[in-house]
Length: 182
Image (cartoon, rainbow, N blue to C red; front, side, top):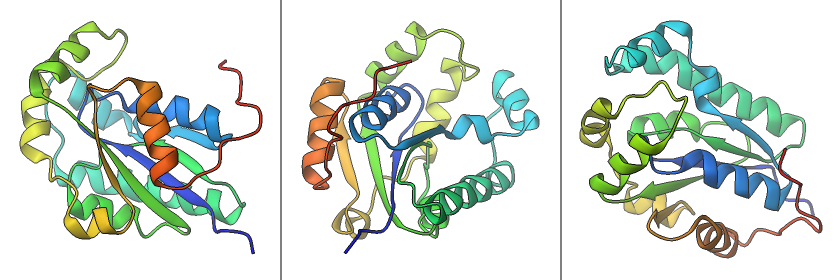
């Protein structure tokens, strides 16, 4: 019997390494990958670029669009890897409504490390000044979420170690030949 499509939502605040881990997982598993930032309307990007934190009313349409994309992928028989901050339990609850199995992978680490990572990256619209508001908004995974197959991961470990941990903990199967990075 074939398993239903799975969605791995790589979550956490800015600077946690969501894009890096999602890319590594997508290559290892041969799964469709998407960046939640690509689903933001221009108004959200403009706010964040100006250092203005998003409010729930900014996030709900964005999250609905992501959930609907996940369902469309599942209906096509595709498992996915998606980056999304998913900072609040209510946001994760909405995303978990997508068709298929949904597991949240919370990349967690010290504020100092997150800030350093944000300062060292280029070409991203999220300024370091928004990190405190993201950390204040973050609701860690609940015991129920963790019992349901979601994971909390320490970002001080290497991306390779984290990907190995995820694949092992979720009992996923690596693709025979990993995709060559573009």
